[in-house]
Image (cartoon, rainbow, N blue to C red; front, top):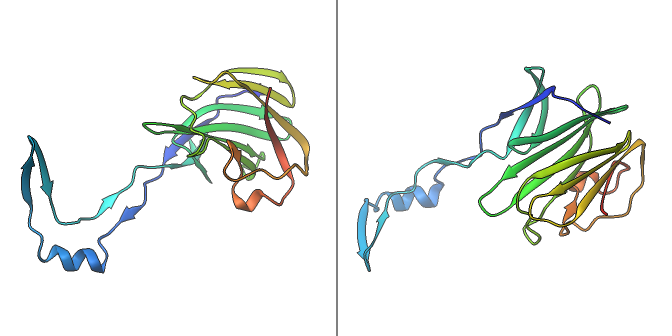
Length: 187
């Protein structure tokens, strides 16, 4: 495995929430009002359209946009493997940071992905201190965490044990019953 610098991320817009029928009905009677309770001002306004912060990005390869979209708004690391690319991206929230690990073919198709972090097991800080052990192994740590994570990339997909969807590492449902290129464990 070799570190590369070919990829970049283009943020995709977050989901737009429009007022539904319930909101539109009550907006007829709602006017902007401000009340003060114990020195704190609270303003009530009619419900309006709003947009979530982005959580997904489109991949760029040497500045050219690809069709591939991944979770994450920051690209933490990228590596070239003999069978494709390994990318680590993250979403940096105010209280946790989810890390996503992707294995892509040379045609930029996602062949496997792992989500590191969960609402029940928050991890703070991004991936750091990458150590390439061999062509198929990468060790890294997470800030504010004492453990070292070992990522193994298989040359051919293999069956791995079922991952609990509520654990620290999990896969999207579409990957649970398939063979995997990636194996993540703690050392």
